Image (cartoon, rainbow over the protein chains, first blue to last red):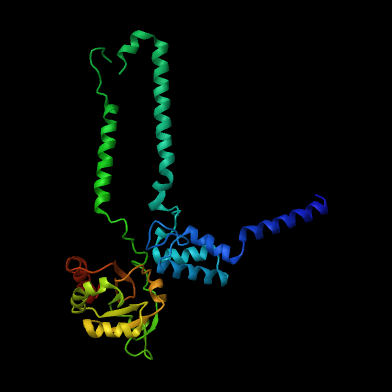
Length: 135
Length: 183
């Protein structure tokens, strides 16, 4: 890598980091869109105008201003209001089925389909007389 | 396999079984209140606070000073109509074996004091949380709420919403008796 490209790469990385982090206000807003309002349970904190939601948004803004990380702020909310406030539940023993369930169902469906096709092929290769006795 | 005997088509029962499972799931879900949040605090230390007494703001109540004895924290406000309706039950709660402390949530002290004067003051002591900071630490998302804290300072029970006689008999009295006896 030439020094020129190296510099460019470093510059781009720095810029990407900056773009991702955004301004503190953006970060607080993004966090508020990821957290559920405990009072008006079908809204995010960002969307809600409930008294508590406003308090919690203020709290997020303050914590962002204090330099707390996203993870710390999320933990602050979960400690108080439970996993419920996260739209994306964490992976742990109690939520394994939630995360693995769709893949399990897909697997069961695929296996059933494969079994069905294999049986139909076998039956057709054995000829029509056996087909009638098929259960 | 004999050509005359058809094995039972078990898989044909599958849709029926799936339907029954779904019915069972719905029956369960109907009994369950989806708005009731499980408390994240159960079994965890009650958040510490030092809050000014409602009657005498110069005197602070430190939650640490309650350590070693079980107690009840009841979150209320004068603007909360439900609290008014619940008040008779709170009075009964306060006649139980544990001291009941009031947390006056996001309220004006003058309103709160007038309310206590009018309704009767069942609390051992009420502390003011005018900005809801303590409430936030306890995960309060509506008033009234009730927390039972054991002698080790751990939250043992939490109820969000108004207390009822039925709840008092079914949950709170047995728990308070157990904690009062050193449980």
